Image (cartoon, rainbow, N blue to C red; front, side, top):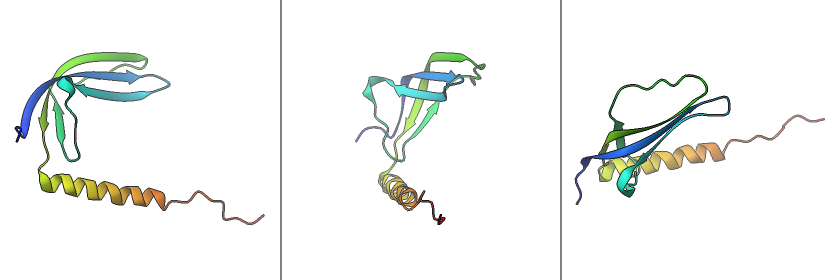
Length: 95
């Protein structure tokens, strides 16, 4: 079994423009995040000004979820998805 807590390099793309407001983190070495895992990015807080697109390199700590956390996260996600499926956007008014 691999270590449950480890550090890895990562790249962060942050965009704060009129068309998008997002931050994406990509872990190096092809590390995949699984349900229930936690990722902590190290370094100073970043506050991009409006119109900025930043790409940064940082260290990240990954804490792998245990068996129970993994199963719980999958169950809760499935229930939340079911909640979305039950939402209706039909127009109930009669014309």
